[in-house]
Amino acid sequence: MNRKKVKFGETSKEQDELAGLVEQGVKVATSSLKFFQDEGLSVPTSIGDKWAIENSLGELICLVEVTAVCYQTFSKIDETFAIAEGDGSFDRWYSIHSVYYSHLLNKYKQELTDQTILECVYFKKSEEQ
Image (cartoon, rainbow, N blue to C red; front, side, top):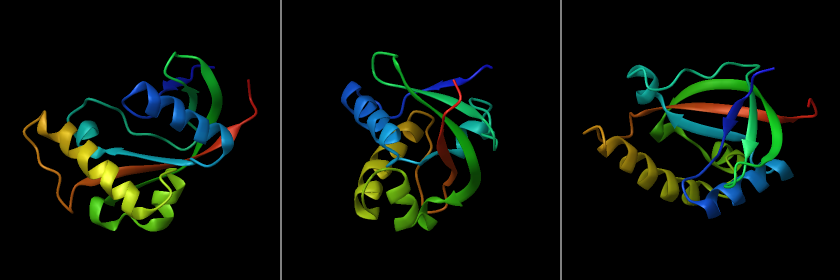
């Protein structure tokens, strides 16, 4: 079966840390900018999608299956989702993602606002090899 290879984070350190959190079952969600789907730069995630989570070296850490997908404005992200993303608290999630998403959007002359739409994805570890 074809699986999407996924590395969370930008730096090697972040990729290794976040892959470890997925492996431990701490990180069970992720978000992305819907803007990229609207621009044809990425495709929407679907329930049942399978991802191969990799570390910074491209090594397989674990497999996950998408269990839920929803769209939410940046201002509606809550503590529960922030913790599911593996960030520990809403304040830490907000601090990380406001900078990260602003940086990404600035490349396209866009601005992060409270109304920016995020694709919020929940997943679970899969035993399937």
